[in-house]
Image (cartoon, rainbow, N blue to C red; front, top):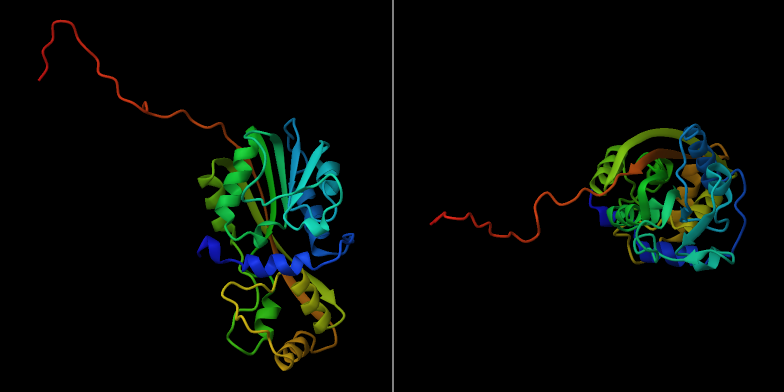
Amino acid sequence: MEADCLVDSRVARARLAALNRRERTADEPAGECARRLAERIEGLRVPPGLVLDAGCGAQPGQMAGAVLKREVIGIDWCAQLLPGGAVAADIAALPFADASFGSVWCNLCLPWVANPPQALAELRRVLAAGGLCLIATLGPDSLQEVRRAFSDERPHTMGFLDLHDLGDMLMACGFAEPVIEAETFTFEYPDGRRLLAELSGWGALAAPGMHKALTGRATLAAAAAALAPAGVASLTFEVIFAHAWAVPKRPAKFPDVWQPIAFPGADVR
């Protein structure tokens, strides 16, 4: 899977920017993922230093600070969602110096990143040696009901990294000892229209290569009906949880510039 083909980031950002700033409630997927991520890291040694809450949304540092017991700096590229004190920034181009943080908390941010390897490389860059990276992201079984609900063959949801893709990317970016696992859970919505409206507001329907024309009302109505045949719409989230450590960068194996060595009395041709 091409790393830059997971989401139409232009559309996703426009839809997220249109949201009014709101509080995340406990029953939302992001809150549930954060709680489950916290459960998985109980007993881990948390390095000293600042925590970067990458993709913090409307409540920067709330869960990360409570779990990691460190001072938190939140960043998100959707400036309209951010309260005072958080930084409007792109995870793939962080405005921080190298080794600025002891830990990174990245909850449901990667699906909205056009180039996940670049974003992970940036997270590694701003982590100090020995730093801890904590990730919760969506896997390919997520939103499967939506993909089945549309009768056309056009893409309607963003794409997702699978467990192996994420592990390979972490290793390639300089992380070590990744621990990765997946869990599936479902959320219920009162009807299919509400489900689609919520996903659209999140930017989750910003499919790569999506048709530039708006989806017709009849198509949307049919999909909404297919999502809730019994009056309640269920939506699957496959969540991939990962943590890994920032290993010290190894020195170059060979010098950048070769220097000649002279041996007294030797005439080597």
